[in-house]
Length: 336
Ligand SMILES: [Zn+2]
Image 1 (cartoon, helix red, strand yellow):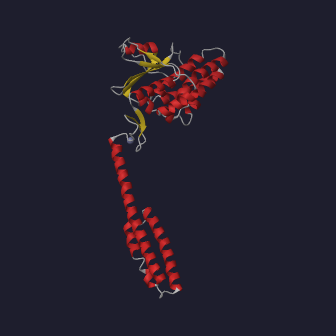
Image 2: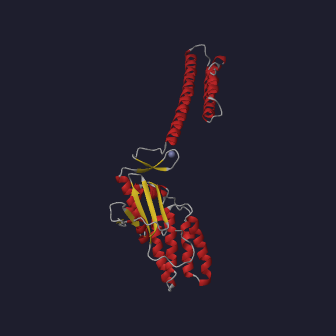
Image 3: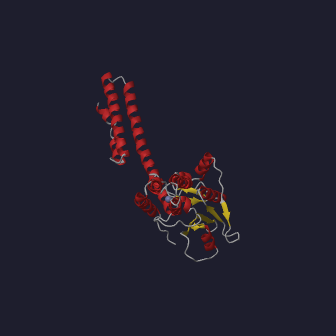
């Protein structure tokens, strides 16, 4: 059933998010709607009276979370309704439109947490506006929204996607995590968990189920995508990224080999210069003037060689050109 984002009579009862994990088949199913309709759906009813029912690969709910870096939920999703509860009746339609337009735009991506948040905000507002006392209405709306903000809007990618971070922060908030395990058909399958208020208990349950099944959410070193891995050691998400990593490794190896080669040539050449200068120092035929010229030529050579080495590293000069150049340099000493 499609949810309409406009002013209407609030839906009786509360909107819940239900999660079903199928670890064996590596699937997650998420349903959003009224609890009694979801129960009917899970008992086999085909009636179109819930708002969301999708099955996705295991881990999708956690891995597709996208942080609200701009605090757009608060500014465009929450504030217009908050303002509408405080303002004159004639100003309300414009504020409501602003809020509903934003919520509508948020369901387009099909991501269940966004969908759940939009319904909770919309229904929370529609229920609150029935209360006569404006301040009380705004307070009730605010309280209801704090649960949703707690579980969605103020969270970072890393906190949702990484169990370690999640548990650190959960213990920091010192909130006990309560969760409803629900067997709507009276049989062990399907086993559901329900989010009534905050989404955090569901995230907690999800992480702990994945961990107990030996599955970890990892971030791919190559493409940056999150993926499910059977070991914390896995760092690459797919065959494609494994191949890409192989190429990167080979490029690094080749670059190092080339660098080692011209570095060695440079060092050998320096040694040759030192040997020649050393011999000249020992020889009685060398005047102090010649010796000092030789030493200063060596300094010039070293500084020029370093410049050229940098040019090779930056790709402005080939390593072959560098080696060809360097090999004839020490002969300059014989010309002094
Ligand atoms: Zn990847």
